[in-house]
Amino acid sequence: MSVWTDENVALLRKLWSEGHSARDIAACIPGATRNSIIGKAYRLGLPDRSPLTRVAPRPKPETAARVSAPRPPRFSAVAHAALVTRLAPLRFADGAVATVLTIRDGMCKFPIGDPKAGDFAYCGRDACRGSYCDDHARVSYE
Image (cartoon, one colour):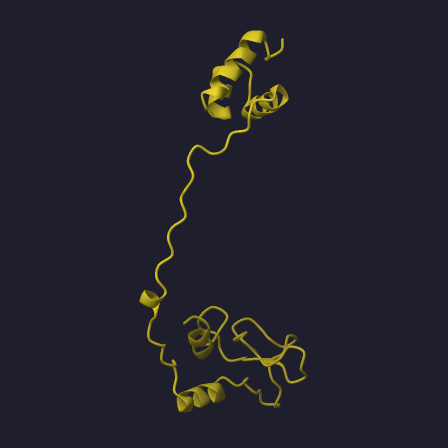
């Protein structure tokens, strides 16, 4: 037995014109689904409906009121140079650095340098905060 009897089509037309949602109409018609309501409304040529409520765009605040003072740098030049020196890759006893082939669990995996360059390395120090040493964790997770 078809869901779309004359009575159900009349009920669909009435509820659709009153602005009920397809889900609510489907609840009133036994055996109908939201998608079957939408499809039948389309085939019957019922008018498209726009959302009942639209959110009005918020006015943009004045740009002059949002001007703030420039932020000071986090580190002085001397502190930054000292930190960069401390963050150089660890050299092992044989002078080698940690590479993708030599990095192990428990070692800092912070990449140093350009991965395409021949001098690319990982930090290699003891990792104590996730995958990074304290210094690299501090730089990475401000």
